Amino acid sequence: MDRKEIIGWLREEREEKLCGLWYEADELRRRHVGEEVHLRGLVEISNHCNRECHYCGLRVGNRNIRRYRMTAEEIMGCVNEAVEYGYGTVVMQSGEDQGISKEWMEGIVRQIRRETPLAVTLSLGERSEADLDAWRQAGANRYLLRFETSNRALYEQIHPTLNGRRSDRLEILRMLTRMGYEVGSGVMIGIPGQTWEDLAADIELFRDLDLDMIGVGPFIPHPGTPLGRDVEKLLAPVSEQVPATELMTYKVIALARILCPEANIPSTTALATLNLAEGRELGLSRGANIVMPNLTPVAYRADYEIYPAKACIRETAEDCRTCLNRRIASIGRQVGKGKGSRVNNSSLTKRF
Image (cartoon, rainbow, N blue to C red; front, side, top):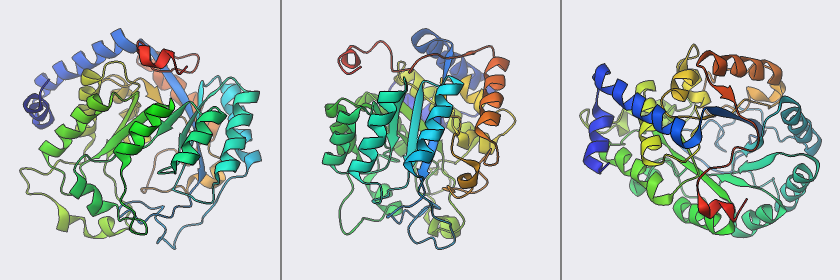
């Protein structure tokens, strides 16, 4: 599929044509990653962040947020729940929190790998090469870092530099691959100023980077941020601006599956936020094969507010597990067993 074809699908609105796209993506998903839906337990370990990203509620300039950082004991409590529920992976996510030291996280990763059968995924933002290498040596299996957009000017428009340091997430992703991580990345859909050409280039980059995991979701700014207040000023011309819609998210999931048939692709909480009734199910039937039940203690859930009105923030971990199991069964799929690493990739057999 070339750039012109990708843009054609992104702009497609005819339901009968899109049904063909959904079918192709779902069939490729079935053939390449199977019928299992793997559950990856999410633990939002800290909402501290030292960045000023113009859309995110965790940005350092937000004074209307109660900051927290979970203790090692609290994190291990969530990890043990993941084991009890039969999950194959625990995902530890935070803002870009320099209060999470290399040594502290290294100790937690070692403990998880020593005491449980779980794979460990980290999503802690841009960290130094020394930090990332130490965590890999401690046993971390995967790292998630969205590049957000392949358009450099657009990226810098919404992500201010930190102390004048130019961010290069693509180089970090390549470095993570060299270190032996299974690497995940992705983009936001409908960033103000994002054109069809930009988004098509993003989807091509998924393939060029040979990503093991691809996560995409709609652009949902927090109202207390610059983009939450002044988004209209940055929109591209109407004919070129990508909409931040549920439908567009399904299109990108399907196209990601077609271009990267072996990748693990989640049906995200953002989809559930847009469509609580069936957003996750539709994502799973249009190319996705992963969901991420939330293990974060309820006392912290509402404070991890990247965007407002996030789905399921008051559900307990047990509630979330029960709900997702039911939803997966309702579409004729089954919950996966094991770590759910990327399949059919000879490069990964050396890493795992």
